[in-house]
Length: 391
Length: 59
Image (cartoon, rainbow over all chains, first blue to last red; front, top):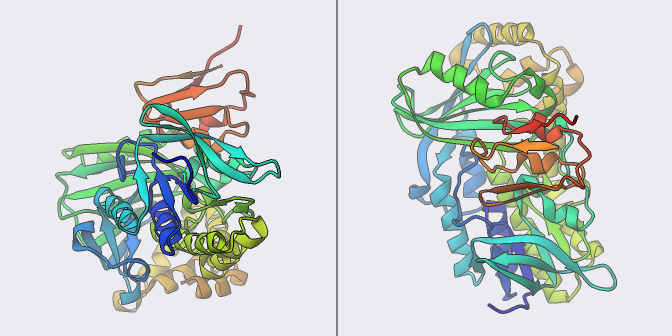
């Protein structure tokens, strides 16, 4: 393997692949390093995405899709069930991330990106004037130093690449969800409805999700907000739910993981380095969904990095345009969603029951996601404008 | 000192993401804590979704 590259991407998830792909479009030499032995596995994700958002970024392949979602069902702590139809623009999919992530890396490689798995980056190298100019890595068991003009940190929620370059990426406990998920089969569910159980009895500071992958199989998981983890382990909450609601089911897979529930980091570029995806905290802080926003973010980063290679300018001042473009595209909206999330965290289980009753009073055909959230924030009218802009 | 129960660990890296001093390292099925750098804030113990990490009492 050659040692000199224009761009080195650390991490082969959707944000990394999109960043690599777009960086390579004008002929830059791009290397993407994935620490695990396989792109797309293990899956640490609920796998839900919006149809419109995804189709704006890539041509959707049917092989990626396990289920089509056109409505949701929210269950309050007192068991009030509120079904809401999605508008067409809100329709979504539950993906098979293993196939999906693999295909995105394949698309990147077809555009000229070199992909390596089992490649762990444990450090960065710097030029005399402090620019990031390469990585220290273990590639397939061999320690190597690789040189680059720009490093793209797509290393997920751990985000050590940013730290190596002096960016402050460690999470505050109020900005991260501690999550577990099981792939559960042998259950009877509507394959087109995503379900959310809310309230402290299911998941303090978060929610429990059931995302169908067929009529008898689903991702069932939950996230507890970091600063509420003293209420119990996510794994124990999930086991309790499964034994009560689906006692005769099979569990095909268990995974754990952290989900960023934050605004995008203020600084996601520095000299010779950009951060993308979970590493830059581009996840929707209200829903915790980050696949499409991470891809869009990676795409914007890749476009700017390609320009930087062409102009031979790797300074943070030049790269910052990516950060500005992201803020205009999704970052600003995430700030609104973050405000809404923080308000929702102030609600008690009684408040949630009350909200569920109010939404139930609206005839089914007249309910919408927007109306639900207008009711959610009714006690804080200053958020209504944020809700209208966000949904 | 933090004890790691590797039998329970899913190697998800959530502990790494909250460590304020970056003393936890994860590569495939290996989790290492650098006890010289560790400041015993125990955030990793609190955030772990599976209860893999435990504070070991120092006598």
